[in-house]
Image (tube, rainbow over all chains, first blue to last red; front, top):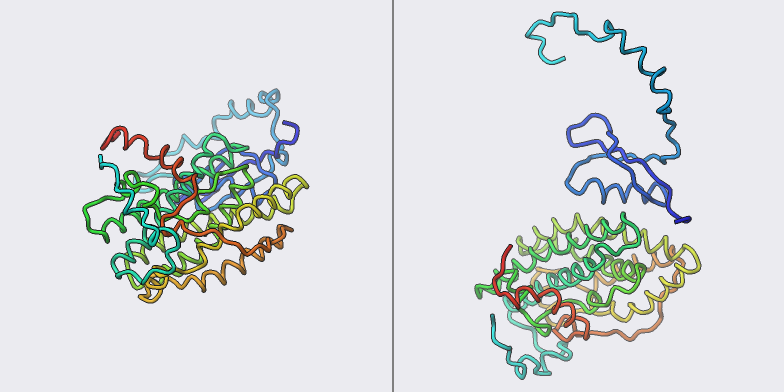
Length: 94
Length: 276
């Protein structure tokens, strides 16, 4: 369809969540309708307390072909993972 | 399976044709009638809207329409459940929905109108929602706590229905030449079916008198104000015809209701008591 509505990415903050999480995408003519559609499509089971919509076109993404240079250098730097510390039991989950 | 109803007594013209001339019914009967009007209207509209499932122009609207239909069917369970309780004849909400014939239904004629195109469906929804929302608001203050409780729950759903249908009527009315033309045609077609819900008869008057349900003349004021505002924003011309169809609330329906019931009731009629 040449006259298809633009695509929007939908982010929803759940009942107990602190941050909005990406839940999917949908088509809508504008932001207001995108929020209504998101309400109907993604919050049918009382999932959310807040909705964000962002035009998919406004998202800049990393290129899959650059995956190597972008992420591999971190793989060899195990000291960035704080797995070498002894954590006292009474600290609990960190 | 009930035997065929006695058509001669059911179609007694003094009860079926106008209704407005008849004397005020006894309180319990009037409450049963009034609850059927609410429950049958949400049932038939819910069924009508559910006919869109899988057919709406875009996926997002398909789901939105299905949500609306499910809300209305859910409200039906509550209204008809209470109606059955008030009647006290051992019938359930399901019995009322699936085992009554067209002349026993008390829904508004507006809600049995065919879906037409997407615009006509939305226009019908808006004209109904603009009545439904203030109606439920009034019902929240009912002297009958069972009525007030159902109205409070339904009101939250219907506030969204109205928000959505009004928004879409404005967008499509004030949209392209084609969408404007279709919305105006839908409005002209449906307008003569809007009088019934705004004009009290003896049952409505008895309910208002008892404080169980709001006065329809007050609801009519809210309806006209809201509809006028939305139509103006939608650049749609309010039809000036004053002829209004009536009869749905008293059980005299258009030919469309029979087809709806044939589809909706088929299973329970063919396989009485079937469950899954």
